[in-house]
Length: 532
Image 1 (cartoon, helix red, strand yellow):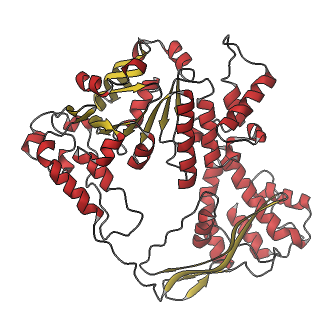
Image 2: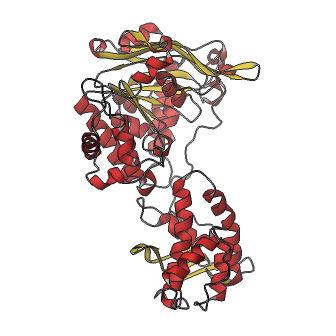
C-alpha cells in the first residue's frame, strides 16, 4: 500500500505534515484480541483537508484517537505515525502531552466531551495560552486574548468568556470548543463529527468557520464524518473506511462524480433526496462486520450486490486505478458501467405523492402557547402554534435550535403544560391540545389526575437527571420547578420567600411540605408533588 500512499500524495509531498503507515488498532477483550482498524495508510499536507468517511463502527474515531495517543485502556495501536520526522507511537507520554494542543488539536462531536461544565468558557481557552517563551500570560492578558479568540470563531459577545458551557446553545458551545482546540495554534486539527449534533443552519456555520480558520492558518485538517455531503463540501481528498479497512481513496470531486467501490456508491445512494419522497428509501442492507471476520476477503462482500467468488477468495487491498486514486474492489473494471447505471436509475427513482389528510385526527393543537420564566426573563417558546396529526401519518417538525420543536413535542406527550393565557392560576389554558383515546373519545391535553400521573412517570427521569454530575441538568431541574411556581403562583399573592421555600421543599432541601398557604390551587399543588 505504500506505493498507493506515494501516488496519492506526490503533489503535496513537499508540505507533508503527517504520514501514517500500517496503522493497526486492537482491543484486548478477555483472553482475545479484537481488531478495530487494519493496515490503514493516510497522509496530510499543510493547508489540506482530508476526510475519513464511513458508517458507525468503521473505526473512524478510533483512528483519530490513535493519532492523538488517546486510546482507551486495553486498546493498543501499532504502525508508524510520522509527524515532523518523529514517530508519535515511539514518543513517551510526557512528550505526547506537550504535542496535544500545541501541535495537534482535536474537536469532538459533543462539545461537552471537551468542555468542563464547572469551568467558565474563557478558562478553557486562557489556560492553554502561552507567550513566545512558553510561559503563562498575566491574568488580564489571558482574558483579553481569550475574548479575541472567541471573536475569531464568531462569538463577539465578550461576556461569553464569563459564562459556563451549559449556559450556551449547542452551536456556541461548539465554537468555544474550536477556540480552545486552536488556542495554541496547532498545525493539525482533527475534527471528529464536529457538526453532527447541530441543526443544519448551525452546522453550515461551523463547517464554514472550520474551513476559514484552516485556510487562514494553513493548517492540516482531518474531517471525520459519516456524511458524504459534508466531506464533498469540506475535503480535498477522501478516505473511505469500512470494517477497519480502506476501500477507496480519491480526490473528493472525483468520488462525487464517480465512486469506484460499491460501498462508496451505497453511501451516496443512501442519502435521501430533499426534493421528493421516494417509494423505497435506498439503504445498504446488513451491518458492519467485525474486521477479524472478514480479514481474508473483501470486507463488504456480504452486503455487496456485485459480490462473487473472487471477492471472498482472499484479501482485497487497495490498488491504483488512476493518479491519486485507488480502490479495493477486485471487480471494479467489470462492474464500473453497472455502478454508473445504478446511480442514474436512482436519480429517477419512483416517488410517491403525499396521501390526503386524514379525516380522523389523533392529536390536535390550536393556538398552543408556552412561556418559560427565569427570574425577570420571559422566553416565549411557543406562540400560538396549531397542528394536526392524523392516523397513519408521519409529521415532520423542522426548525433551527431554539425554535420550539422539543417544547411542542413535550407538550404533545404531556411532559409540559401549555402556558395559561393570562398567567393567572385558574385562567383558561393558552390554547387547546387534545388527544384521542383508545376508546375513540377525546381528552384534554392537560389537567387533573391524568396530568399528575404523566408527571409522576416523567419525574423518574427528572430525578435521574438531577442526580448526575452535570450542573446543566441540576440547574434545569431546579429552574423548571421554579418557573412553574412563578407562572402559577405569582398572581395569587404568594411572596417570593414563600416560593423559594416551596422550591427548597420540592428539591428535598428542607422538610417543608404542602402548598404555600396563599394559593388556592390544591390540584396544581398535587402536580408539583408529582413533579418533585
